[in-house]
Every structure is written in structure tokens, then in C-alpha cells.
Image (cartoon, rainbow, N blue to C red; front, side):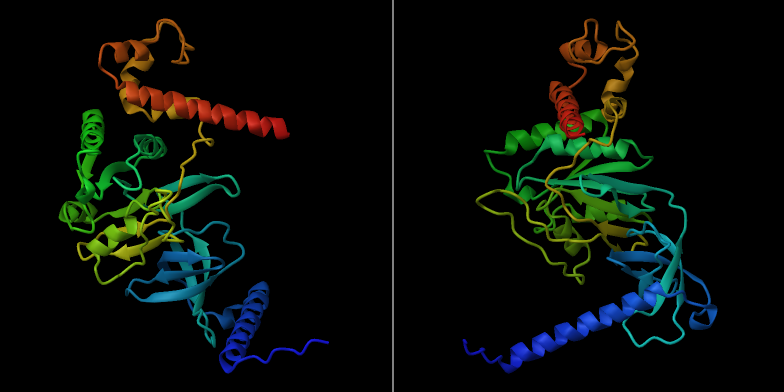
Amino acid sequence: MAKQKKLSKSQARRIEENQNKRIAKAKRQKASDQPLDDSQLGPQSFAQVITRYGQHADIENDSGEIIRCDIRRTVKSLVCGDNVIWRPYNNSSSEFAGVIEAVEPRKSEFVRPDFYDGLKPVAANIDQILIVSALLPDLTPSIIDRYLIAVEQLDITPVLIINKMDLLNQDNQSLVEQTIELYRGIGYQVLPISATEEQGVKDVESLLENKTSVFVGQSGVGKSSLVNAILPDVNILTKQVSDNSRLGQHTTTASRLYRLANKGAVIDSPGVREFAMWHLEDEQILDGFIEFKPYVGLCKFRDCQHKKDPGCAIKQAIKDGKVSKQRYQSFLKILQTNSEIDLRHNSKM
């Protein structure tokens, strides 16, 4: 029989700490399964969710105090930015000071599709969405289009931010200039910035005043770096883009709300590699291309699909130079991708 290796003091201490954490978690889980009566809880108060992790959340009350809470099992959906009703524990020996009992109706929410979780809310009660792209890992207009389509389904103002302009060179200058011109020509506000060099950061700050905004975009585009530039005392962990794969690395793992001195608030959301559109109908995707709208009702056939149909007003507008061919190709690509997803899904049924 092999002799068992003796643990070092640090290993033994780490194992004991992990066991104690598991025991404490099990006790909290057991406690949360039991109904709480009024004698165990203080009066109801209002607060806003700063961040959520699992069955717990950090909330901020009217005094600006951050309070760590459990979440009632009856609360089915809770995301950063939610306004909630909570009650403090009268006696608590753990790090959790209260329990969230209810969520107030959301005035807005931004969701992203997830193949495992369905539609996954990212942030609630937001006034504007800042879509962050960057010169690295790659400036990708097709990803920008997908975010714009999602935002156009909401009554929320989108702003495009092109980050890492300090990396502008002869190789990428033409693409960057064309991209800025394209989206400004459609009517979107576009801000070229460099978060690390603090170029254009003041312009972003002015947009955030008196509003709750959320930063969205691919992994590695510098959303957290931008929050760091706006709030240098926060010091959010950031990562560099992989030189080999040129893919962004996930840094922010959960959405978090930060207060600003100008009475605004900004939510830093986790990045994604892709932003799917399978949850939208073809008509909703078409509506997301706002420059197409003046021509939709002018097609020869009422049921025009705007693909190979004769007499398509959108295709004629492209020939006349009134609509971008690049955006039209992006529209077709998204429809094709959604169709392929539907075929794969139906083949498994």
C-alpha cells in the first residue's frame, strides 16, 4: 500500500477553508429554503441592483450604501439595474444582510440570445446603449449591425464608440474612415476614442450625464478600460487581446453598475464573441436597418423578401447610391445565418 503524502500546513489550511465555505453555503441554502416570517425581517425598503451573482446580489439603497442580499426563490428574473424591494435580516451572522423580495416593473431592458439560456437579460432600466467596437481585435461592421438591430427593437438611443484609435495606421485607416462615414451617414452618433490614451473620453462622459447607460460589445474591445478611464478609482481588471487568435478575452463576468459624479450611471457588461439574431423574425431584422424603411413599401410586390425579387425598391436604392451595399450584404448574411439555425434546429426535432 502506497504511503499517503502528508499535507503541508498551507494545503491543510486551504482545504479547511474550502470545507468551511461549503458548510456555510449549505447552511445558507437550507435557510433560504425555509420560509421567513416577519419577526426575522425588518421593514421593506427600495434599492437598485448593482450586480448579481448566482442566488445573491449587491444592491444600493437611497443612502448609497452597498448591501449584499439573498434572493427569494419567487424572484424569477433579476439583473443589474433592476429596482427592487428588499428587507433586512434582524439577526445575521453571515455576509448577507437581507433578502430581495420583489422586482419593480422594468422601463427597459437589453437582452442577448444564448443557446443554453434563451434570451438572457443583460441590464435593466437603461436610457442609452453604447456599442463599443475597436481596431483590435478587429473592427467588424457586421457585429455592429447585429447590436444595432437589437437596440432598434427598443425605445433606446444607441451610440457607436470606436475604441483603440491609438492603433490607427496605414493598414486600417481606410476601413476605419469608411466605417465612421457609413454609420454617421445613416444618422448614428459615432465617437472615435482611445480609452488607454484618454482621447475622446470626455466626450463619452458628457453623454453619460443624468442617464443610465450600458456598454456592450465583443470581448476585448475595451469596455472595462473605458470604465477605468471614466472612473480611475474603480480599477477594473482588464486583459489584452490574444496576438495569435486576435480574439478578445472575457474579463467582466457579470454586469455591474457604477455611479458617476455627473449623476449618471454606467453598466459594464460581459463581452461576447458573437451576437446572434435567432430570436428575431425577418421583419424585425429588416426594421433594424433604419435606412431601408423609406423603400420597404415601394417594392413591386407586397410580399417582397428583398433578395432576388424583381422590382425590389431596396435593391434599386442600392443601385442609385442611396443605400449602402455593405449594409445590404450584412442584412442578407444575418437572414441566411438565421435560416441555417432554423434548419439545424428542425433537423433535431
